[in-house]
Length: 386
Ligand SMILES: NC(=O)c1ccc[n+]([C@@H]2O[C@H](COP(=O)([O-])OP(=O)(O)OC[C@H]3O[C@@H](n4cnc5c(N)ncnc54)[C@H](O)[C@@H]3O)[C@@H](O)[C@H]2O)c1
Ligand SMILES: O=C(O)[C@H]1O[C@H](OP(=O)(O)OP(=O)(O)OC[C@H]2O[C@@H](n3ccc(=O)[nH]c3=O)[C@H](O)[C@@H]2O)[C@H](O)[C@@H](O)[C@@H]1O
Image 1 (tube, rainbow, N blue to C red):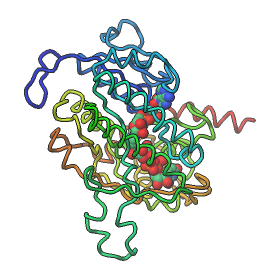
Image 2 (cartoon, rainbow, N blue to C red):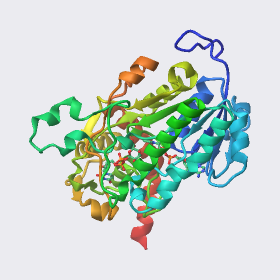
Image 3 (cartoon, helix red, strand yellow):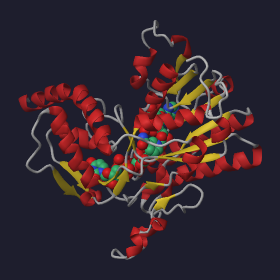
Image 4 (cartoon, protein in one colour):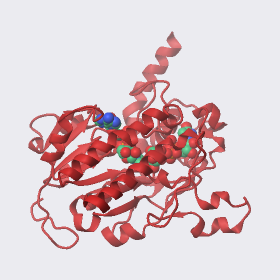
C-alpha cells in the first residue's frame, strides 16, 4: 500500500476517518475497502456493529490498530465531538433510509435525516474538519417528464428525465404524501451544508447514491430483522425468493430505477476520500445509468438469477401486484425514474461504474442464498410443525 498516488500524482498520506453509520450496509463495505487497500485509520461510530464484526475480530487482524468501534448514538452523546476533532475527515452515513418508514415514522425520519446531522456539520465546521455527507438521489423526487401527458414524445427527451446535480429541480409530492419527509430532510441538510461552505468555509462533499445494492443490504424479515419489517426492494425480493413466495409489485412495479453494484460505488467514494482538491465543494451523483429497469423487470431478472444460483425452479406465478396503500400504508408516493447525469463525477474523479445488473444480482443472490437459505428452511419447518 506504500506509495499510492492520487489522480494528480501526489502521494496519498494516511488519514484518520470518523465514519458515522459505519455499521450499516454502505459503511461495512467502505470499511472493508479502507482496511484492505489503504493505510487509513477508521473510528467507526454506530449503534450496532453486526455488519463489521468480521473487521473488528480477531485482534490479530493485520489492520487491528487502524480500526476502532465506538458504540454511540449520535442523537445524544457528548463523545461525538471528540471523535470528529481526532479525525481529519468525517463521513456521515447515519440515517433512517428505508421507504417503509418515511410515511409511517415521519418524525423519526425527519429527525434522523436532518436534526441529528446538525451537530455533525457544526463540529466539522467549527473545528475546520472535512465532511463527506451521504444524501440521496431521492432529493430529485419525480422527473419533470412525469408531469407530461402519458403519450407525450417529450417523455423520451433526456432533458425531461436526466437528473443533474447543478441544474435539476427537486420535485416532491404534497405534504400529505409523507413519503417525501426523507427526501425533504435530506434536501435541507444539503442546503445547510452548502451554506456552511459558502459562509464559513466548510470543506464538504455531498454524495447522492442511486440505488446501491449488494450483500448485507438491510435484513431478511424474521431472520436478521423483525418479521413485520419492510426493508428496501433487494431484501424484500430476496426474502420472497428464499421463502418461495411471489414477489410483490407495488402499484404494478412500473417505477424505474438504476441499480449500481456496491463495490463499484465504493470505488467512487474512495476517490472522493483520497482526492480532496477534486471533491471538496462538489455534490456527486453515484449510480449506473446503464442498469435501468422497471421494478417488474427487476423482479423477473432476480427470479431468473435466483433460480440459477439456488438450482430451484421458479414459481408458476413469480409476481403479484399489490397497492402501495396495502404495502406501505397511507402517504406513500414514488419517484418515477432515476437516471444520474455522470458529467460532474466523470470530470472531477474520472470514475465510471462497470458491473452489469445481471452480474451484480448473480453475486448478491449467491450471497443471499448462502447466508439465509438454511435459516429460512429451519424457520419454515418450525412454523409448519407448530
Ligand atoms: N444504500 C443506498 O442505495 C442508499 C441510497 C441513497 C442514500 N443512501 C444514504 O446512505 C447512507 C447509508 O445508507 P445504508 O444503505 O448504508 O443504510 P443503513 O441503514 O444500512 O446504514 C445506516 C447506519 O446508520 C446507523 N445509524 C442510524 N442512526 C444512527 C444514530 N443516531 N447514531 C449512530 N448510528 C446511527 C444505523 O445503525 C446503520 O448502521 C444513508 O444516509 C442513506 O440515506 C443510501
Ligand atoms: O436507494 C436509494 O437510492 C434511495 O432510494 C430508496 O428508495 P427506493 O428506491 O424507492 O427504495 P426501495 O424500497 O428499494 O423501492 C424501490 C421500488 O421497488 C418497489 N417495491 C419495493 C419492495 C417490494 O417488495 N416491492 C416493490 O415493488 C417500491 O415501491 C419502489 O418503487 C431509499 O429511499 C433509500 O435507500 C435511498 O434514498
